[in-house]
Image (cartoon, rainbow, N blue to C red; front, side):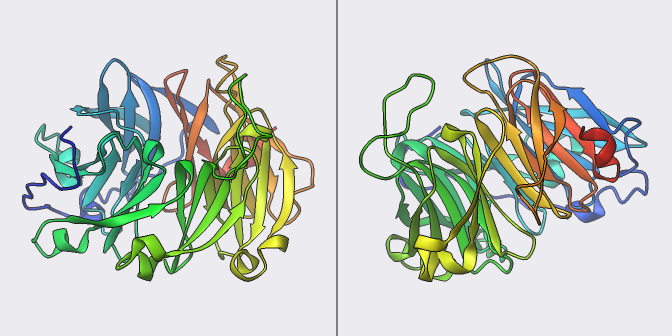
Length: 379
């Protein structure tokens, strides 16, 4: 991966939209079982599905990195393409129009043409958007209008903002600047409508009090609230709020109405719930719930009146972990639990909301949970 604050992106025609690629009625046919594990050739980090649900893209790390293309149909999932990728591919995001897939690669992101990925073209990688040298890029997210691309740079303690509108205009892309965060920024989630971006940093406060797996003591992390419009012109001045968010907060997800921000506090085995209306103007009272879940929670998703949290036990090992299922209307209510593999890392719902995707990093499986049979899946 080339280093530096620039781009080596050479664009080709983006091809057809995903929504027209495989408009098959059987793509979203439920799997035979309420919970299905699909073996993949590596350690899956992130999984995202096309808008029609017919294709699932998975980032894999093993000895080398790969982007895996899975096809869904008639209640089955099959491997269609396994494309080697430069760097250490981790968090991925689809552009809102479905034409592009970006994968964080440690030094920025790799940009893929999704139509070519689906077609099995080994030239699907279009180029790279580079962040600062040694950035440790791990996560990425498009603004809903697709004009901006945000990349979490763990080792640089910053989020890099890229002008993606230039790509759409055929002029190429360029970095706009950086949003300074705290140590190890990861999670990225937009408010409905895309006016605000929420992000986590694992350690952003002075002092101690937090540690994991016998590591060094550090201060609490934070939840950041970012003004997206300001980030487009002055990223360094775009942070509206920095609110303490427990020990090692790693992921954030918004409720469908945007009223709650759910944060996984990995270092204290808790899910934190924030009132988003208070984060900016009344931050001392924004934290409305701290809910114990399993060991070392990471991935978070919210849908259908539920909040889902992966209990990774990432420092303890083992091949049998879980996904906690909480009642969004009453977080204190008894929790259900979906069995998972080793180190369940990321959660993502398909666009139709019918399938929950879980990447079991250590055990090398993609887990599909049928939301219509959640009562059967979650005991």
